[in-house]
Amino acid sequence: MILVTGATGRIGGRVIHELTTAGAAVRALTRRPDEARLPGGAAAMLGDLRVPASVGAAFEGVDVAYLFPVPGWPLADLLTHARKAGVRRIVLLSSASLPGGPNVIERQHRANEDAVRASGLPWTFVRPTAFMANDLSWAPAIRAEDTVRNAFPDASLAPVDEHDVAAVVAAALLDDDRVGHTYELSGPEPLTTVERVAILGEALGRPLRFTKLSPLEFQTALVADHPPVIADAMIGVLAAATDATAPILPGVHQATGGPPGTYAEWADRHADHFR
Ligand SMILES: NC(=O)c1ccc[n+]([C@@H]2O[C@H](COP(=O)([O-])OP(=O)(O)OC[C@H]3O[C@@H](n4cnc5c(N)ncnc54)[C@H](OP(=O)(O)O)[C@@H]3O)[C@@H](O)[C@H]2O)c1
Image (tube, rainbow, N blue to C red):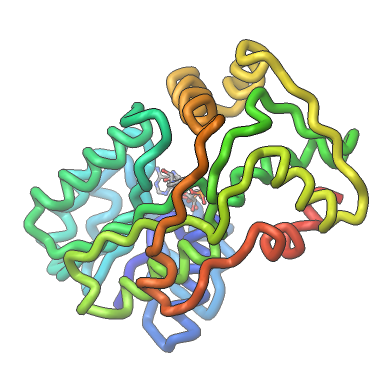
């Protein structure tokens, strides 16, 4: 039995799809099991990752657990429950190193990895760079006025498709031989913000505008959706990624044997979100 947390999210749902397609038995953790629409007949189970005791029953009978990080979760306590329940190994969603040196986001992910190492449970770490899905935050402004507003037109990222993140997680969950591996994932090409806007415009069949914001205007927009400390970290990442070229990371190919998906493919798949 494989336990998938973050099961109702973009990555978790795709992980369940990959696992059930491969014939694995899957249990899906969610705070809202009655509302969960899960692929492939996965069984939903109630649990809150911020309340370890609520997850204890979900760990029972599980061989491998995929842990999706939730801010402020008591990970060491969760891992104690996992060990007691007999979980044999852990696959942890983490993060690649970010431009501009360790910030609060990267430090939190490294602390998660440290907690998993300290648990003594065998582990696999999946470290994606920025998700292509982050650009879904552009959808309301594109739908309303064909415009993307951002302070960093030349910031270079090599964003990764969430389907590739899920494929690597699923490969790690299905194969004991992945123990001790750290997979660092990016997409196949470095792209600046304005290059991604242009590719999205091609997918939509209409040109999109880019409006440059000041860092303060951008920070104000970000704190509508993120805690200020995270907004500041995101700005630091994009500032450091400007006038640099994002590195291409090998993890998708290492874990799946195939190439990572392109931004153009992702944009085609998500075009309806922007229409
Ligand atoms: N964005 C990036 O560029 C990037 C890069 C590297 C790593 N990451 C990591 O990726 C994750 C974000 O992925 P995403 O945007 O794909 O997420 P998402 O689709 O928004 O999914 C959120 C999931 O988290 C679950 N969840 C939230 N709080 C929970 C809690 N207290 N207990 C149990 N489940 C909880 C939700 O489940 P229910 O609501 O059903 O309970 C839902 O399944 C973050 O952990 C982040 O650190 C992101």
